[in-house]
Length: 384
Image (cartoon, rainbow, N blue to C red; front, top):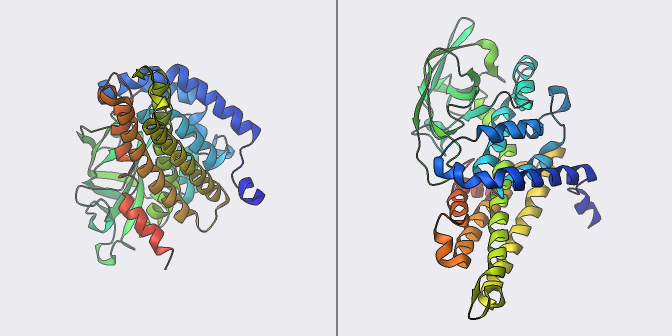
């Protein structure tokens, strides 16, 4: 039992950092959450705040200007921010996702060029894998990159890309050898936003996560130097899948934070709301809802922290555990937020109270970074 607990025990420094983030979220993030959602505006003020407190340094090693604190501390930070504002927490999750390909597979030159400026929060990345006709199936990808001397020329349109228009660079996956199939015919590149031929296409109007722009980056004869290739030619799917083994943790943490935020709000409301002469938390129907919400969320936290510890250690089964953490926590976030709305009754259905926003935000966690149907496939394949 002690060996398992030690796998993800939090240090005093981690607990202190968590408390600092928790206070910052309470004082600065929570008061902005409703406005961010209502206006569907990217929270530049909170991005600067996170940079000042080294939150953007969490994914990076110290040699690249980061905190060197690992995946677990990053997940804790995402969770704490997501308790109040899922859109703001996505800034941290995508910071991890968009830089992971460079950190895991990039050349030393690419790491030196991009990672330090991301660690300070000066630069922000985007991860461009999905396309209008290639979501869960990357084999349908049609974006192409053709070698021309010392450069690659990229043409195509991506879809559902987070950080569109605010990212300073995009990790772009493109077909480099159509005859080789998606397992060997796709490569990954870094494309800076100021490259001629790059443009911002349609921005989506979404159910939730409205403070994070999502849409279509367009690449028309965009030229990048050969040095912007990530890893080897034809190994793009290896880069993508290796990245997702780690990055799913961020979405699991976001879902966990949403669930805990909704549980906390519903419990506080139930203490104050009176019906039939007593607080509604005196009624067993409400008590059992809250008990299940808290229990399921606590279970999700244990699974996520274990998965993050495995990622930090580089355990071979980290992909399985990250998929399980994402699957469990995102499904739980949807269940819990629906129940939170029910606890608040009519008040839960109006935007004056945050649980309807939390319910809308929760839904996407079951879809992005791989749908939960795909997560079940990933997990099932480890059981053969």
